Structure formats: structure tokens, C-alpha cells
Image (cartoon, rainbow, N blue to C red; front, side, top):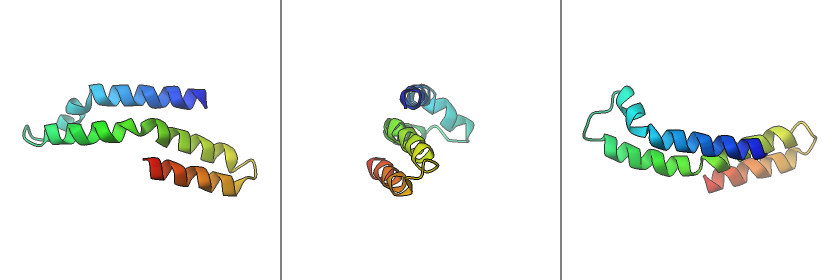
Length: 80
């Protein structure tokens, strides 16, 4: 779980640092890039919860607790 949180934080930081470059690489013009950066920054704030949701689902499902796995996925989707 700790590794998931660390990876979520690392992905969030790199995403926020290189958001403008990524949007430009995907063909964004100069005009909509600031709007895209705002959207990506808001989206990336939830990266930690999204990664944690995937980890809980991967751990709980094979362990036989499918109901708990689904609950963790739903909570991750609601927070995101």
C-alpha cells in the first residue's frame, strides 16, 4: 500500500510538471493548453486515490473478499 501511495504521488508530481508539454505533444494549440492544464491538474490530484483503489481491488479480490474489493473500487470512483 505504501508503494502505491508513493507511486501515486510521483505520478501526480510528474504529471503536473509536464502537463503543458504532454498537451503540446498530443497536438494541443496555444489557446486551449491552459484549460487543459487546469483540467489535468484537478484530475491528477485524485491519482493517489485511483492507484490505491487499484491496489485494494488487486489484493482483496484474489484473497476471496470480492464484496470488499467492489466496495473499495466504488469508493475510489466516488472520490475520483
